[in-house]
Length: 412
Ligand code: GCO
Ligand code: MG
Image (cartoon, rainbow, N blue to C red; front, side, top):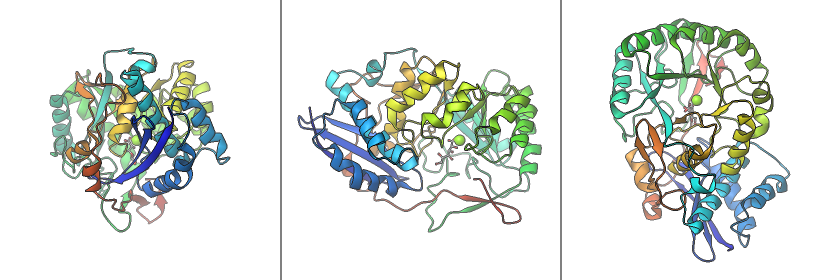
């Protein structure tokens, strides 16, 4: 079975997505996600100009050989653009293989290790009353694990806080803090680490007081702290029993996590911006983290995230794959299939895609009992509507940038 053609589809139903469609000579179609938020067209060009010509005529079943051919063959290894492009190819080929086998993809990855994949949703509020409303809404929707982000007194806008906490599932504005804000240039936010560190513990104290001990709580520091600030935050949150504290420091320096680890027993998650197993080499072997955040979409696809997770399993490190709305429903479907099969699955991030996005991608996985479960149809379970996708052309959109109050650029 040979690859006959491969098409790159850029569509923007509410936000931009890059999709690779691979068609075999006997008409089987597979889809892969290569969306890199804010830099989408770089991946689209990498695929169209440099990868598609290499795919045509290759054996569609030779997934591992194609992965190695694209990874080693380019000479220039790793990096978010390269690894998102390879991820799109790898995911589309797994979709095809499962469709040919007539099985849902998780069956080819080892079969179900659990009934469903536990997920966490994003609650937020500019202040405590708004946050409580958002947590309550998530509990009513069936979430059992919830990420908590709030405004910080003195700061106008803070990462992770929606402008309207009332927005419901499927609404385009529900997660408008990591836009897709349609502006010619990136929005600018401001930041004050001391104010943040003073405020966060009181937020978790309030949430535990209101909602009790059962619900799993998570928090994302979004790469903004120094190692010693991160250690302090981890320590101050220990009484509130977090499921994890995410991205406490900029992730490039693996050593930073050693300092954090020495000071706190709060579990640590990191890696949404990592794209290869090498980024985790020391973190996993030296047991400096508890959860791996790499999504299939940015880290070379199902084949390579599986490799990372097998390495992590030897050290009791679990998965916590990145699942923001900028990972398309194809990337999410792939994560849910892999999550079903992995023994060391931990949790899956689930920011529910807007209605407009879901209409284009046609995902079939189901949310129930606080978790996601793939449908039983062959492949990934995606029904991509190309005609509808064409009605939503690409619109340039940037992530925000962040400045300290004196104007210094800071990590966003
Ligand atoms: C998360 C992430 C996202 C990223 C976004 C960038 O934990 O979900 O931090 O919020 O900011 O995916 O494109
Ligand atoms: Mg994050």
